[in-house]
Image (tube, rainbow, N blue to C red; front, side, top):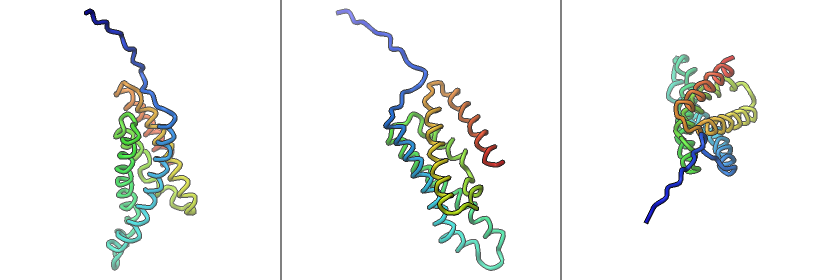
Length: 161
């Protein structure tokens, strides 16, 4: 019996359904809100109690930075599990790129009122998760990483200006 093989044409970009796009956006919003919530809880109840004792004002001033860093890492872990569950291509790459891009965001927008902080944090995290998951769909790994690095540099320059 003769077997016939068909050439399967692979596209240069992995397909992503509209359902996945919406799920990534919602996950990004949730991760952004978690970053803020974790930062607030860590800063208020843990780090200020540990670092703001006596005349140690320098360490006390750094409590917000430490809380933000820890919160970003914790929320990124939750975001990674969410992206894996959704079935996003290269979820670890997406989470790393989004976390590096938005590193220290709360320090930049910290002077806004609470609702502004929540809107900006949730919105920018959702946009970064969407953008990086969109770029991660490129089959050529080196090209996807190169485009992500370029986008990270642009976002960091915009945030620091």
